[in-house]
Image: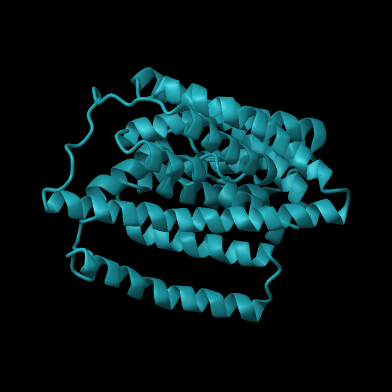
Length: 325
């Protein structure tokens, strides 16, 4: 495959979305390669992971210098994630050759995309609960740099293993699924510590998966170069725009795209996809307004309500270089 400028342009657009949202590029890049550029699922996953391995260390060095990394959590996560990520590649091989393995990867990718879309909803609802608790004086004081966070080895290893396996098979999860699990297990982590810890643990995780795909997958150099050339400047631009973008709107749009991609990975027809997406577009705003009213907020968000916390978190994630997780 020769270098494809259109693919680099698509990677640039996805990089902008990643810069705006902090979501890992694998959740968008891999399905775009499969659905619009006709790349086989194995080649898409392999090349996306190798591109991620090139870009991940940049952001991790930033957080290590800032001291926003819980090294103990990183170690326990890597105990589970590094071998599991490599084993994820072996799982794809065990599925069989030819069309069988490609179909298996598409199904696994569709499932991972659904989890990522659901994760966006979970994160948004957690923020809503936190705002309600602080408003009512029920919340604990906000964590500080000195707030102790004690590692819980077994559940942390299990999170790493589950995330690593999913990343090894689908390339999705190192910057989306794992960070949601960390939020639930370690609520005392500050936002920058959460991002820094997740990003640093993702470096050996993605490297392990990338090595496995280079050895046993379908890595293509030209394809990987196109992803790197496009996504890096796109993510930088998205980071600059994130301070002005409405976080809630971007998250809803991203969930819509993830759901659409998942449906196509599952082989849904155009009519079925259109009906499901239309239902999603109509129902989710009503459900969200109901949840807001249930917790004492107005049905519609007040101007600037989402921006102080969410925008800073999105900028923090995107500026950390999480453009291909």
